[in-house]
Image 1 (cartoon, one colour):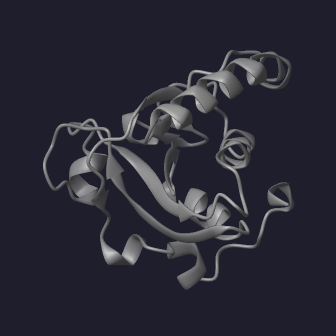
Image 2 (cartoon, rainbow, N blue to C red; image 1 turned 45 degrees about the horizontal axis):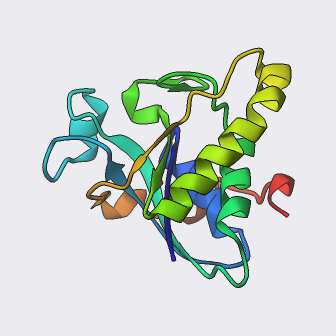
Length: 160
């Protein structure tokens, strides 16, 4: 099965999901915009409409889509529009890109359940977009598994 999420800079998001049992592969890239074949520089310009995203293949007999959503929502601030920490711009927005009706329903139901927790933790409601998956453009090779390649990532205890 396939899942696609955007939650700020794609380096950390990819590294987190790569640690999850049942996630078979990941790739970082750009999706959600109108520009064909964007580069990192294009996306950073803020003119393409794309988000930095992670697309993953997972085994639903090992990890559920709901579990992936919980990891997604618990590892970034889903209450800020176009910002994660110091990263500002629409490419850093929080988005669930669903691939089928079941994913859409699961994401919307879980988002609603998590609203009260978000209000307590962040003082704001979740603003994560839940939209149909669009064409995914794989990012340049140097972005793939960037944190692992550069020894900048240690597994987060939030994952297991």
